[in-house]
Structure formats: structure tokens, C-alpha cells
Length: 387
Image 1 (cartoon, rainbow, N blue to C red):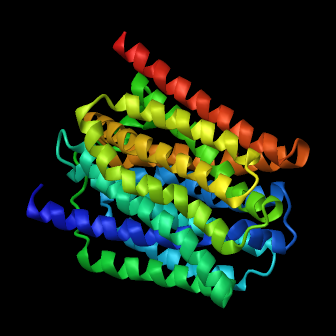
Image 2: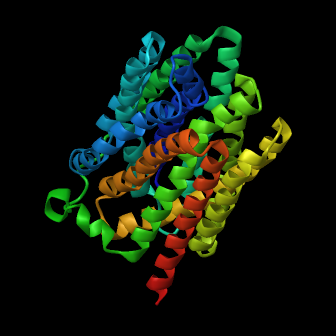
């Protein structure tokens, strides 16, 4: 990697870390915060899912435009918008305002996450996709891992509004750093979305498997993030700090494993790691409702973190490889994040309906089954490809 690309690489890592740290801070607080204003079951799921709904609606447009106009403007504008949402959380005094704030936060995330991934995919050296995406994911998941426990500690010590102010400050710092250090990119080649359209991204069988896996894996994440805090608060009677620690734990473990498993993914078949990680995640999710104390749920979340550490570097490397083959990296990464967003919509909403109809235990089991469906779909796509 050239010196110029290394500078871009570092700037992207810093930008994504600050964005994910800010969003991670609010994660363990939001379900309980919504419950405080009268939300129950489906309403909690809707508050959590509204972030992904707005992100999903904008992703195709943002990915296509960034392929033609460049990346920096979207990343910086998105980080600035994320910093403003902290004030929205502070002034939100009812569910409609909370939904609005969460929706705006989703718009900001749509401008940062897929575009940073696309930028990274373009500068990644051939044959080293797993290594560099593993390092990038280290900062991505590192922000998510640090955010929940930081938000829980700040909330328990200084109050929930202080957590929101910290979220806004961190995102604003990321905005300033991106403005200073992130270089402008030239327009992205000659292949444009207006000439090809999104349909051609669904022709390769392996991409169908990747998107199916990403969707099902994200449904499980949505279930966990939306209702693990409720389970910890209502069933295990844990403090906000401990709930934040639980959410941080699996992300932190996944973060620490990104680089070593990224390097392994460059040496061995990537599909092995994706399948193994997905199977472990499904089993972990199914075990959550059977825990009866902090120590037990701590171990289950540890196992869940290992699954993400194994699967995500290889999955990210596979999507980068496909993006380089097809072109239009911004559109490719927007689709990749789009399926994640759809999963994060469906997960909380399905879980909300499940909680109100058949109970919390069945909700986590349902998430585990859906995860296994994703693994099966991915494995079948590999078999068809090899055939």
C-alpha cells in the first residue's frame, strides 16, 4: 500500500471508530429509555428499528451517487449529522420525538458506514483483503464495543443526558478529523449505476449467499441489541453498567479477533470461517434465555463475540473481492449494508411481536433459527458455485 493510501486508510479507521463509538453509546440505553416513556414490545422494536428503516431507504441512492461524485462529502456530512442527533435524544420527551431522532441518526449512518467501506475496498491491495478489512473492522467493532460500556458508566454516574452529550462530542470529533485528513477521491471509474443498475449485483450465486447470510445474521443482532437489555433489566435485574458490559463484551471479543482471523482468511477458504461463525452465533443466541445470572450470560456473550470475530473478516473480504470484480464499490457496499439494515429492521420488529405473543424465551430461539437459515443459504451458494 502506497504512502498516500496509508494516509487514507488511517483517516477512514479514525472516522469509522468515532461514528461507531457514538452510536454504540446509545445502544444499551435506548430500549430502557423508550420503556421509560411508555413503550412496550412492538413499540420498543419500532424505536430500535427506525434507525435501520431510514438508513435502508437511503442506501441505494447514496451508494450510487458516491460512485459518481466521490466519498469524502458523504462521510463528513454523515458524521456531522450524527453529532447533532445527541441533542435530539436530550430533548426527546415522548415516543414520536424519539422515533424522529432515531430516524435522523439512521440517515447519518447511511452516509458514513457503506461509503467508508467502499473507500476501504478500493484501496485494499489484491490478495490482502482479509488482512486490511480485518484491521478496518478492528476500528469498526472497537467503536461499537467501547460505546455501550462507556454509555452505561456515564449514565450511572452522571445521568442519561450526559451519555447523549458524549455521543455527540465523539461524532463531532470524527467529523473534524475526517475534514482535515480524509483526501478527496476522483470519480469512481467509468462504470456507473445509471448504465448497469442494481440488478446485476444479484447475478453471481456467491453474492446471493453473502446477502442472505448478512440478512439473517443481522436479524439475530437486531434481536440481541433490542431485547438483551430488556432481558437483563427485567429478568436478571442488572444495572445499566452491567448491561452495557454485556453488549460491549461480544463486540469487544469480535474486535480483538478481527485482525488474526482476517489474516487467516487470506490463507484458507473464507467460506469456512463464515459458516463456522454463523453456526456459533445461532447457538449463542438460542442460549441467552436459559441464563439465570450475570456469570452465565457473560459466558454466552463471550461465545457470541467469538462467532463474530471468526465470520466478519472473511465475509468482508468476500464482498470486497466481488466488488473489485464487478466495480461500483459504493453501490456494492451499500447493498451489503442494506441487507444488514433490513435485518436490523426485521429483528427488533419480529422480536417485539414475538415477545408480546409467545414470550421472551421464544424470541431468542427464533433469532437462532433464522441465523441457521442464513448459514445454510450461504453454504448452498458455495456448493452451486463449485459445481
